[in-house]
Image (cartoon, rainbow, N blue to C red; front, top):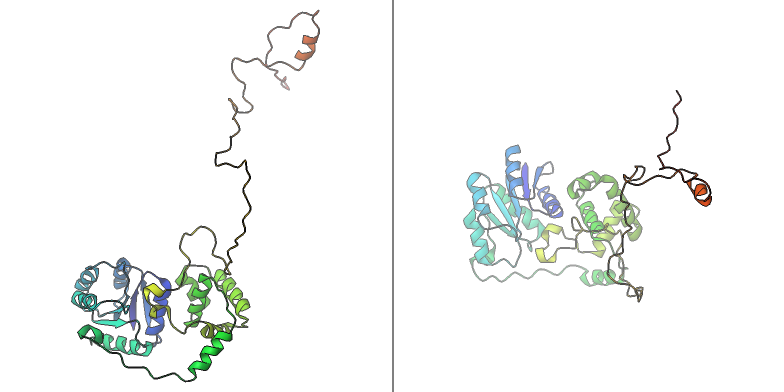
Length: 311
């Protein structure tokens, strides 16, 4: 099967791919950070499903224009739980075949995607009217797991390290992580080495197991837009630190004579070095000795000293 995943965040696209691989392990994907990328994906191959991770930067009417150009393509949209029924109905009017809440269980999300892929439609129950969710059954050993999580030491990973470790959790290799995040494969290996040292893990499997104990076992795509984890900003000044740095309260005091004025710059010569200045006379080496002897005749006008040729 072939899928097109639309979202500007590379990590959220990888989360959608992890869900879609449960439908077909040999599925082919095409990333689309925007609608222009989705049009390029349609030119490369004909996908079976377009999955959109909805965000606020998508303007109204863009989905309708895309669906009008590709009527036979089913579209599934993942939205937050805060989206109102009016917004969900507007997405249906624009041509979406299915709307899925991110708060839905991951197993049900896969089943809903399969339903939309087969030609069915899906709507959240709260769109049709007031909805009271069914109480979830209590998990086994929930109290013991919470106590064990409190006893574990806190590990401070940088945003880039958390991003790479979540990709490792999805089963991606170093080459796949580097291609998805736009970094080199060597940088991924350096980050993984630092992660192993901080977590005390000997390999990737152990690091993922410890990571699942420290953080919630949840894909990034299932998080709401307001709950997304901190990520390194593109073009931010300075390198992304490997470890979280603690802010120091102490600062060196400034000098009393320090001011914000610019320092003076050394003056440049009027003429470049090595070229004679017109109007000025160049005195020969014996000019100083002649000035000390007043009895001698004053020398004539000085000329530039020229070395004799070898001819």
